[in-house]
Amino acid sequence: MADDGGNPEKEADKKIIHVYPLVKHSDMNEEMRTEAIELSITACEKYASNYEQAARIIKEAMDKKFGIYWHVVVGEGFGFEITYETKNILYLFFAGNLAILLWKCS
Image 1 (tube, rainbow, N blue to C red):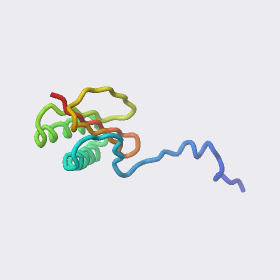
Image 2: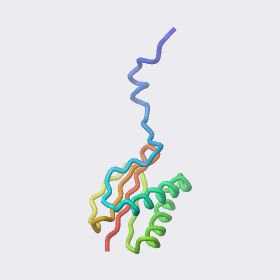
Image 3: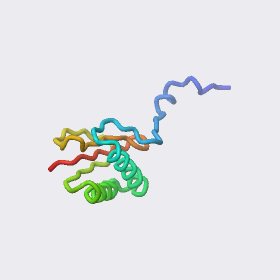
Image 4: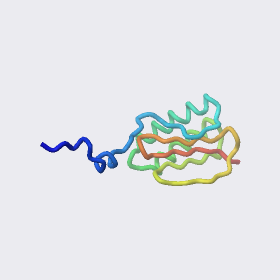
């Protein structure tokens, strides 16, 4: 019998999927960060196949709750360099490769 357990090709094909939000960077206060994370996860689960709609839902909710000028990017495999108001940025990963970036600028 062949043993596939030690095959390095099979191990390299495995993806690590996070089932919890992994915050990479944030300078928001605790209340705002918790609200933004919950909102982001809910929107991305509801619109899993439509990142544009998920970003729109997150932006509109953040505008209502924390004032206007919020920007949101939802997607896989992007880089960024932005200018933002201090205490108003959140960058997190969810469900594997899905990245969510929220920031406010005026």
